[in-house]
Image (cartoon, rainbow, N blue to C red; front, side, top):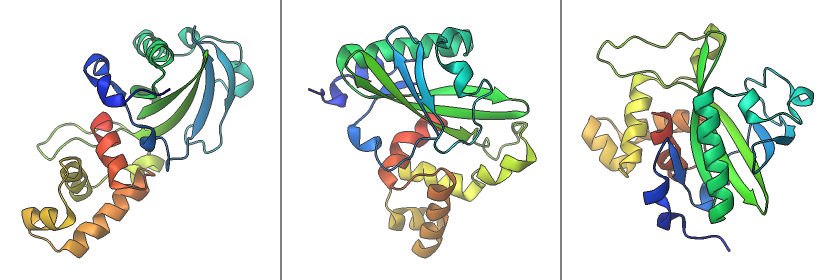
Length: 207
């Protein structure tokens, strides 16, 4: 039986790992799917909707351990999260900061415990641009620039995470509700999300 994720949040709100409700799992097709055992060994993997693929490839991943593939920090966090998901029989979501060549991105990993195994649904998102106050932008490949949120899209998305309605956002930003809806549709499209609830759950991990 799956426990209420809310009961676990106090214990799991560390290292970017959060207990989540099963509803967040739906509506977001994974880019990559991994099957791990409790020791973090890759038992199987598929890439149904790859963005970056995987630098080792599926055939070279099977039989390896995540300690051989990820950086020490990411390995420690992922292995801890796998253990927690299995122990508490509760889905978890975590963010791993990744880099490939000149591209920096976030991998959001949704862990689904299945008895002694864990399925990892992974989605890759470009590292979001910083605010407007002159911070240096991340170095990115030209081909990924369209994945980033514009300043206005970012502003609206962050207000959505504060549970603001379209009308409230429009009044705060002094724009029309139609304009808010237009920008919000772009946010959903770029982040490959389908609902406001997913924005509220996922954006804080990407931000």
